[in-house]
Structures are given as structure tokens and as C-alpha cells.
Length: 430
Image 1 (cartoon, rainbow, N blue to C red):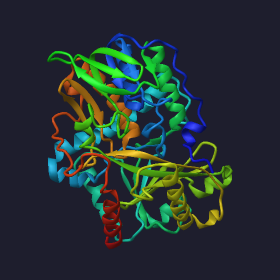
Image 2 (image 1 turned 90 degrees about the horizontal axis):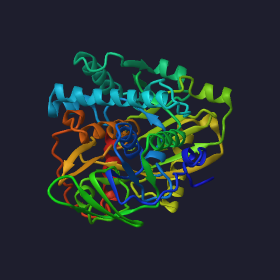
Image 3 (image 1 turned 120 degrees about the vertical axis):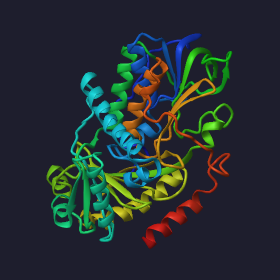
Image 4 (image 1 turned 90 degrees about the vertical axis):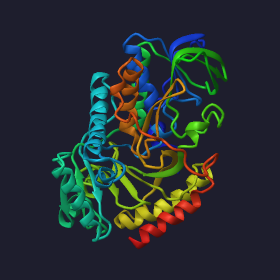
């Protein structure tokens, strides 16, 4: 079993054009994940000189390449709860931003001819307890009644069982606009498109300090390979721990990096895979510590979840893999002792309200905090923030939101084990 991401291991590595670090650019982007690459493509298309500064040796190697491969619409939190806090109009706008985000991914795949197995078969949110169906039915009614999503549909236990070969589920809520794709191949295609448009991509270029020049948006970025002056800077770092807490301390105090872990089986064969998940959708269970799964184009099962509230590392990933192996066996016992070919973990950039945050502070633009719903929103927000930086402030669907620091969070998240115990107890008592 490889302790490596299936997405990156089964995709060609993007090799940037060899270039010296530019002394000056119109826009410097810190982070070479989906947000940074999408922004670079949009900015370069309009004629800006752009440098993407990625600390790692490979683009999209952090959250963008270490997720479950879902491209889902719908909020990370219940729509009705959000509407109760901020009002129907604002909650509806945020929900529709996720619809637009899936559309953005679909459009870029089409425009740039990215071969990444993109498909829109929907997402099925599954109830593992009978009493969870009432909450799903309430969510569906509110989405329809508020004119938010009239395409959602409640499936009873029999209909779920007809497409998910497991006796664990009591029904589900189908979101028909959701999709899925091969994350590694999408990353390669997106990076190649940005480079074709004229953006420079520099890997192995950790940004260690950012220095403001004057009172506007100009900054000087001090990197592992030299200094770059930029008229504008976009921070697209997510939960990465590169850069420490110096120039990024304000953001770090507002994001909790939480590990999410995934295993991928050996190829099951087309018939066995079709029998297991006939709808070939993305699937997620209802729980604070939940599971999510889907099939790949080569008929493997991708099965993930927050197996442990811990930071990803080889030892942590291996321990989490054994927990997920047990969860997989409980969900699909008919797979028996199926071989696991891949196991890995990644960091989710979780915010306190589990919603994204994007805007500008002290002359720096930022977009992050996708809270486990980032594959589509990160791509979308790269484009949106490129528009904001071009003068269209209304392009940001998350503008004008307060973002208070998380109390007691000043460095590594020491409180994760306690958070894990709290959510496990909450799930047990639900």
C-alpha cells in the first residue's frame, strides 16, 4: 500500500518552464493549488504578468491533490442553519456560488480540453440512522421552498439500496448538480493552461516574508530563490504550513488545519464496480466524523473520512488507513479482504463557520478556508479574485464577511484531540 495520493501518482507531473525568478511582476500568487492556478490563468488571459510561487516541488500537491475527488454543489453546513443566521437572501447567494463553482470547473475542462474524467452524476448525502431522514427532508423542503435548489430529491431506503450496495443507509438527499473528476490530471491541465496563457509557475519557491511597499497593493516578496516585487499579491495558501506564522500569522489564527484521510482499493473490475455503486455519484454520510466515497474511471473505490483528528504524516496516515479499512468493511462487507493500493492524508483548511473567506487586508488579497468543500470553490475563487484585482469588487461572493480569530489558536492546533472527542460524542448521541 502506497502512502501517496492516487491522484498525483496516477497523473503526469507538471514540469514548469525553466525560468529565472522575475524581479518584478504585475501579480504574484502565493500558492500553486487550484486557487492560485485558476487565478493565474484568468489574470494571464487579460494580459497581466503573473508569477505563481509554490513552496513545494509540485503544483497542487497539497489540498488540491489530496482530496476525495468530489466536485460538489451545496454548502458545507446545512442551508437552513445558515439562512437562520444570515437571512434567506444571503444564504441563497452563497449556495448558488457553489452551483457557479461547479459550472466554472466544467467550463474550464471544456475550454482547455482537460482530460480528467469530469462527469456530473450528482451527490447523494446518505442517512446512516433512520432519525436522520427527517433532517434531510427538512433540508430538501427549505431548498425548494426558498427557491434555492429545485433539483434536489429525497430517495428512500429502497432507492438508495438500488444504487448503493450496502445495508447501512436509510435513504438520502440527492443533489443533481454535483460532479467529480481526476484531481491530478485536472491540476496538470490547469497549470498547463495557465502557462500557455503566459503565467510563470515557480515551484520550490517558498515565500518566507512579505513586505508592503507604500500604502497601496505593492509588495516585495522574499522567497527561497530571491526577491520579487509585485503590484498586487494574492494569498492562496490554504492550510499549508509553509511560511510559518510571520507574514501569514493573521490568516493562520483563523484557519485550523484538520487532517482528512483516504484509502483507494485495487481495481474492482467494471462489473463489480457497477454493482457496488450503480449511479457512480459522489457519496457522503451524515455525521461530524463522516465517510465519503466514489469510484474512479479505472473502477477503484475511493473511501475517505476524518478517521482521526490529527495532522497528516506518514505514521498518522497509516494509522488512519487502518481505521478507514474498518469503516470500508462495515459499509461494504461484500468486498472482503480487498487490497488497498493507496492511503494518504491531507489538510483541510477549516474555518470556525465552515465557510470560505476571501477579500483584502493590508493591501494583500486572499481566498481560502474552503473547509472540505474546496475543489470547486477554489477554482471558482481563483477566477473571482482575479476579477476583484482587476477592479470588480462585486465579483467576490464572500465579500464583507467578518473573520474573527479562533480563540486560543496561535500556532499548531493543540486542541484537535479534544475536538475529535467532542464530535465523536456528538455523533454517538445524535
